[in-house]
Length: 167
Image (cartoon, rainbow, N blue to C red; front, side, top):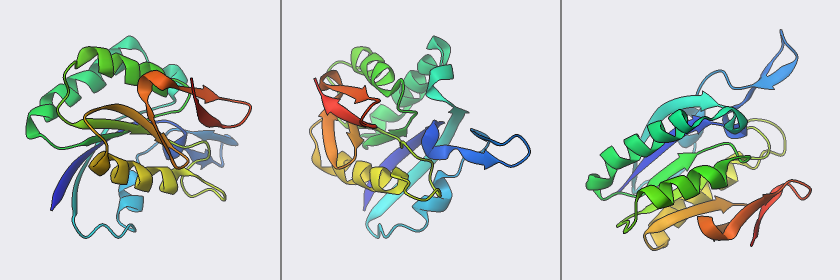
């Protein structure tokens, strides 16, 4: 049985539509509901909700909270997947990479351009691919989106194409 840690920080992947306000916003964690529909018979996933923020609202204090929780989990020796908003995903990934030289496990950041549960959402695909990538890649910090695995130092978001690209 492969153990994973999944840390949720919010972002588009977890957004919901507010009928009262007529906007899409971060209100409550919903990754657990989607994990339960995946067929992962040999995976033990420990999901933890850290925050529910749009990544454009993430602060240095929020990134430090993510770093501190990752530091607590690293001695477990299990891969860590972090759901995160795409706008500042690279920034958080690079912060983690700088915070943990000599990693012994992979840390994978993923998210979505369209919220889970919305028609055409890429969230479930990206979540599934992240869990697979976390099994296969060497220790380090990565972004997994749309069938691609990027070392965090080689990725950037291309807003015009609504995906990540190599730099």
